[in-house]
Amino acid sequence: MLARITLAAAAFLGALVVSPAAPATKPNILFIAVDDLRPDLGAYGVGHAKTPALDRFASTARVFTHHYIHVPTCGASRAALLRGRYPTERAHISNNAIAATHAQWGDANLPAWLQRQGYRTFALGKITHYPGGRTGRHWAEGPVELPDAWERCWIPDAPWKNAEAMMHGYANGGARIPGKTPALETFAGGDDAYPDFWVADEAVSTLRSLATSERPWFFGVGFFKPHLPFVAPRKYFDLHDPAKIPAPPRYPDAEKALGWHKSGEFRGNYAHGGRDPEKDEAYARELRQAYAASVSYVDAQVGRVLAALEALDLAKNTVVVVWGDHGFLLGEHGIWGKHCLYEGSVRSPLMIRAPGLARAGARSAAIVETVDIFPTLVDLCNLPQPQGLDGRSLRPQLADPATPSSKPAVAFYSDGQRTIRDERWRLLAREGVGASARQGVELFDLKADPQELREVSAAHPEVVARLLSTLPKYPEPRPGAKK
Image (cartoon, rainbow, N blue to C red; front, side):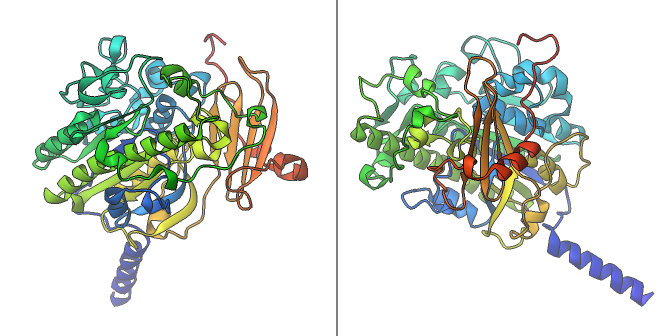
């Protein structure tokens, strides 16, 4: 009998060593999404970053240094997050992916699955593609983007007239006029001049209400910055000397590369007064300063939410995730934007804190993906896993940050673009589907060439063949859909 008790005790203690301790009740989940956030944080080793709140959080969490999204555009990246699945049809690659395809998978999305297990679910700000969860004119008058997923999905009452104006907001209620308003703006006023202050305020108020909830909850809080336009109060600009923010190296013949594009969002939706950052280094420095200022501004707002979680004594039983929906190129590959499959576009921050986390603050270099978040949260909450998820729980990396990758990372974009990334290599393949006639492959050795300056596919045909054999096919249109 004693031997049995001893073995049982040893097994129990072993479980505590290899995984975050299970709380007495199901944990809550605070999910923080930050739009267009590349890993320009102090916690990711970026020297010019001024991100004290997220760096403090990182010291209590597991920092995933090689996290990759699946489509480098907001709506499609969030569709993969909520589905826990790779794109399986052409519509999953569009910004309207959730609204256009939810009828096929919506009953198995992350918040709906949690609801089935007794969770309350809330989405504030930008969690799906459309802030507040409605489509149509001004993102306020059309059908619900993801029906039956949320107890409440909303944007805060604020000076901006509607969700679309808030998404691209300028100071004190100003809204973007496509092609006419600038790509950057600063204002000599308080944090409440811009929308993310109001999101943080509403998040803090909601946490106060949830502190007395008798049921566990999932609360998604979606911040807008540093998405274009790059805007922030003056004090955040003053934190950053534009001369000290490093510029990427020049990319020879960038326009000939498979993944290059014309930076249409940046160039088409914003006015630049005749200036071009590819030809005007002063303007390029101003834009990098404005991006850094936007990151510092949103860092302060995220910090307010995390401080409220601690002050309300909720942190001890809450899983907290900080996630960037994709990266953003600031001149790398001659691109100003995302919408490509290079490292800087598909890599973004992911930090997870779970109750009982061992070795808090340690970094994991494992290749992980956005589709891993769904099964990880279900696992950490000790809930049944839905069938058909493509992701794998990150509990092993949470238990031991040295746990290696379980799979490579894959991503897709329009016109037949695919990529796969393992511990050393990134392969891009393009079949010329749709409007593009470009075809071919590019291979980068990221161990030797982390900035992807040298394309080496001709020197490593065996690597190209191996990675191509693993890379999923480009998604087909849904039967009956327009090709």
